Length: 260
Image 1 (cartoon, rainbow, N blue to C red):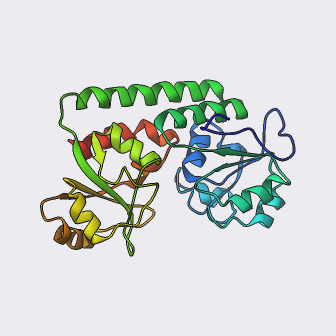
Image 2: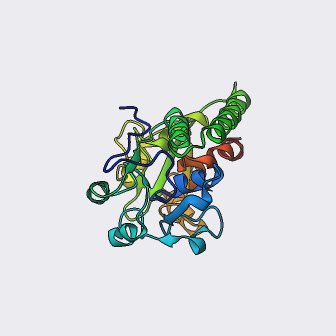
């Protein structure tokens, strides 16, 4: 199985799905940018892009707590989810009734393959290919601009109380690498809990505080500065580090501002 995604499970999907439910915000945005907004019938409450979408579509719950009966009432031709973002038992329950396609994203290349696969699945291959080219070009420009720039040791926090950081085998970790950062917790698996002692010992040059899933604010900088007084601490847009759909076109330009 290609790690970027797997074939639809459950009953067969029509050749061109006309009623799609998306359970992942970044893939919801992708579907819209591929010209498929009219075919979306259900989204999660976290599908905030493009603006106004949640007022147009049926809200099927959150990414981890999908309302199965609401999805069933929509009678979708295709449900699109993600291995990490959605609950396995709920996905299995949906797959017993409807075609379900699940992505599994760890790297930029995985994300690009996912975009191509969704394009093929929905009849939007041409739009997907164009998007992939634009994303590749944007990241190539970022790589060029970072040539010769010393890499920085960084910690990327996604949660508070307890502190949790992005570790190895995550899309965030891969994006950090592409942005010229070396993840000080890259030797730890997935999303480890980080104690103040662990952070002090890791001694990152830069601490990045994400806007999601925990909404870090200016008031949180002080407590981390006390642990790492020499580190530069920045609030960052979590969507630019963790959304693996069409938002990747804009990500390199944003990453450049964070890195340089």
